[in-house]
Amino acid sequence: MSFYIKVDHSKFDATASEIESYITKFKKNMSSADKEVTSLRSSWDGNDYNQFQNQWQKVSGADSTSQQMIKSLENYAKFLRYSSSQYKEAQTKAVNKANSL
Image 1 (cartoon, rainbow, N blue to C red):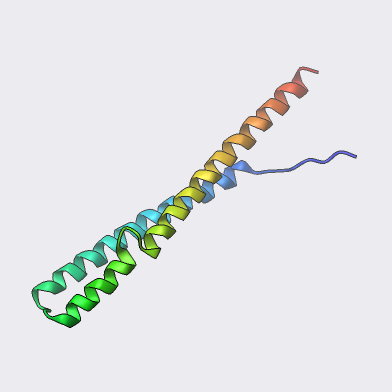
Image 2: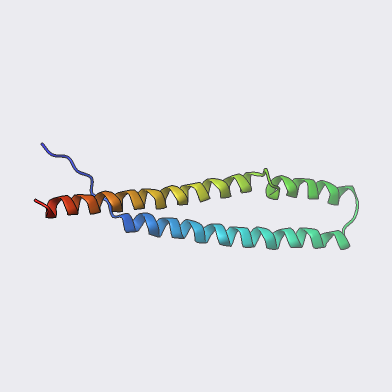
C-alpha cells in the first residue's frame, strides 16, 4: 500500500503573503494610534493621562501582547514559506526521479 501527501504549495505562499500584508496593516494602524495617543498629551494632562499612557504602553510597547502577536505571525509566515520551499524541492526531486526511470 502506498501513501502520499498531496500539497498545493502555492497556497502556503499565498497564506504567508496574506499574513505579511496583515502585519503591515496592523503595524501601520498601531503607529497611527500611537501618534494619536502621543498627541493627546498637548490637551490632556494629569494622573489620568499618565495612567492611560501606562495602559497604552502595555498594549503597544516592545514586550506587549500585540508585539508578541506580530512576532508569532512573522514566524508563522516564515514557516509557511519554508514548508512551501521544502514541498517544492521534494516535488522536483520526485519528478526528476520519475523521469529518470
